Image 1: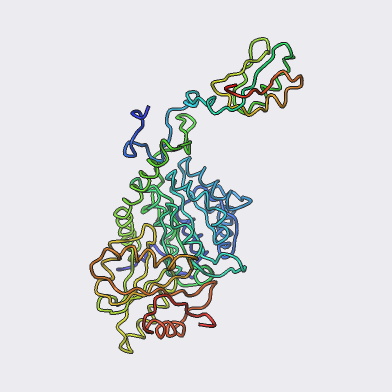
Image 2: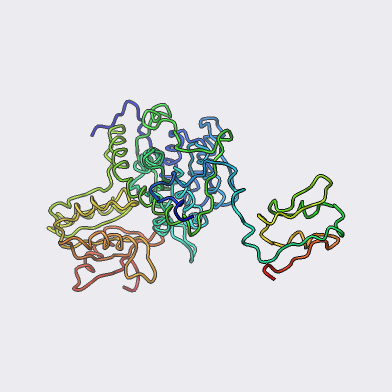
Length: 394
Length: 95
């Protein structure tokens, strides 16, 4: 594909700045956020854009993340375009409002600079927060690099606000690895360009004093389960619409986006599955390993929720072994979070690869080609099912 | 009653309620365990109960005397607690 460079600028930004520019170029109307590392730069830049008169938006400085998401819930219900951003403990504090936003079908877009949850206090990357939102009814994207963080935020607005979708969406970017790394990327010349892809929001329903409605009313034993059934049906129906928008965005930007990305997987015996920035590292590793004659390949998910079941089943066909790499841990569960999705997705398949779960990179522990080599050695031990890599003592 | 309930296929998006003012139909009086009972002879028409009622279960009449609306009153007892002349007593329901 050809990048439409005549309307885009080649520049250098870190992931947080790129996200802030994306929200700015999306001409967001209301922003409410509370600063938390490693997301802080997003909020800082947006407050500057608003202060400098570049972005005509209401910027609500709030006292907590619980209030931040509550404020954008109210704003979104009034029919405008809304944005927030957080990480880790901040997402945890938003937790109850996550469910409210999705149940009320409010198309809020949130950037999540993935960070480990305490204790002990850590500000670096784990996917604990991204996984914490997985059951809440938010669409979740994962960016692999700064360019994707920028693009996915813009695409996420179209996805969330689409009349056939109307669910909130999270764009995950790995804390520090992406949020604070300056990378070259293309951004649009401004709001006028993006508006062609992302017109003004047209809400399905909105709060309007002239036509009063009640949202978020009481539904007990008589209606709650019907509401959830309808919500489940609506959420499960989203993939074709998300795909259509990602294709349109690919055409618009000249950069290809789909649910999953595959690298050297078609003739591979051993596949690796990752989320986020590790995809870049693993692509390098896979290329190196291929040179050594190892028949390996890589799958990374751009769309994590809803889980791209059909694409995934198709991608793993022919693999003898699939290594699922989780940057988090699920205490008490037999395997970590991404593994469980994969196991459930493949259980009914007549032919499926052997699965191995790798836990890596918690709290920003570096994952590099040496860690990858350690992983290779461990996954080839007989009978191995779940291993940790890059940890002293194993 | 069960025949009036909608299936999930018939629900509006996010179950919004587009007919305003329908809370008046909800009989919350059935939740009550204790019933406030007013003794008009002790009432000094100060309207403290009317102000303090967290619902709209105390009705203010023309002459500033009050009447308890048992259709809505959930029996929280705040009116009885606040009444300066103890004109309202909480009585167990069904006794």
